[in-house]
Length: 86
Image (tube, rainbow, N blue to C red; front, side, top):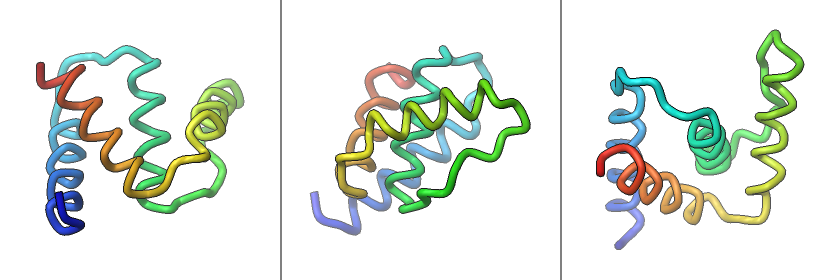
């Protein structure tokens, strides 16, 4: 898959998740959050008003910190395809 295809598939996966209406498990949402942030090279701290949520988000980012933006996009797409679209 070339870079343009990767970006297109990533955008489509993000749009799919954003339009998904069923509740998703918290662990899945945290993985998607981390992959999304890394894929977009947004390394700012989580901005929730709830400290516990910030801690979970920060932990998810730490667990995924050693992957590239491209790997994060691929992981996001794979997770959406295997866990949500299945």
